[in-house]
Image (tube, rainbow, N blue to C red):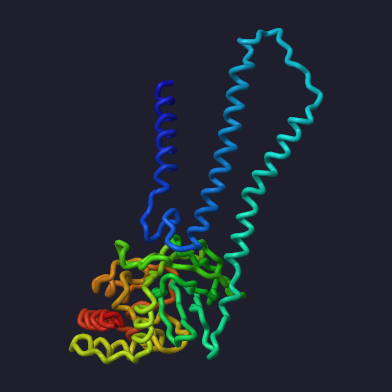
Length: 360
């Protein structure tokens, strides 16, 4: 008996800790630490609904406890017969009116926010010269990585979204294969990414990401899409408009040839083994089989989740399936004409890829 009580106490304690700790998180990836107007609006709705539900729970609990205490049999006696009430217009009005009021309190701001967040008419606004007044990013989800195209700027990135702060950024979302879901927890709620239609929405980034521990926000796929769904992450770098324009200009320039001897050797190997699937220039079009690598040296993760260093990069090149099952990248032997890459070749490839950078 005592053992059973002990187990129940442990279970209750763990449940309470689970509820409390579920609110803990990091600023760069927590929905409970909003870092943009959209996230803040959604957080406000969450707080409102939580307050309403808490109010209902408290009122019902109080009534329940009062009924148990006031009308318990030991207090009233076994022969007590409660007053027989056929009906009460006052009570019926109360328990009809109160739910309606609570529903309106929840429904009005929810409906307003839903339509406001779905309003993307400004996406196509243009100035007197015919240029779009708002930044638009075309997002394509693939197994298991993300491609970002800036159509007005004529540049493409992969696994790295760079955006300006203090303005709306509009997104066109589509999938190249199966259903995914685009989600930047700290910035706004998720939206499905389908292969058959384009979904549109906008986000706003209030703060520059350089103040965060990792210097970036993190985005994720929120739709179970295969064995590496949990590893389908990308980084989001928010900067001021001036720095964003500088980044765009750097991306539009053609990459310079590798200067160091080892990197130059790696560039030659890359041209023979990898160039058919990967671009190394940010200026261009979408549709490559593999991610654009123009900013590979600026990233803070390899394949979206591995620590960004040459050792992990070499392991990834040799056997990507071992780290991200189901992805479409062939192993190193296949890429090298049936022969495994030598250690020297891997060192050269790693040196070249790490040299691909547009940030000063």
